[in-house]
Image 1: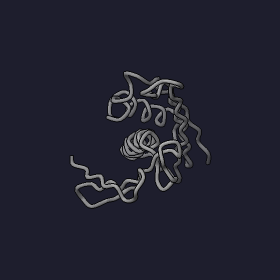
Image 2: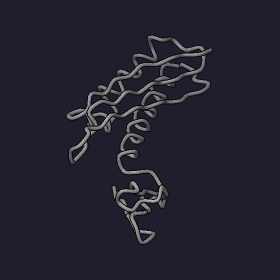
Image 3: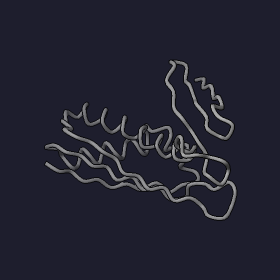
Length: 138
């Protein structure tokens, strides 16, 4: 896996490009010269966790023949305050599903992602307590 990062202004606005040519913008906080022109790196880390577990959960539910009509994830990450580096210590993931889904299968899919498949969760696991819950609407 290769990523190339280039500075695109005279501050800390950065553009990352992967091997397939996909791009994303990053920026820092105003305290270090950022201008809110992209997500901050720790926001991207939290986003990566959400993306990783979402891909797992949706794939597992599909294999369980569960039809997900709509899907959304809300995440809240709490970092240490007043120290550097400021690591995530608590992360909560709230999964929101729409469809005629079996709650037991949804819970199983989430558990499998968090304990077995999601590499980002496993990377964060040594320093952050990751919790989750879910809701299903018809």
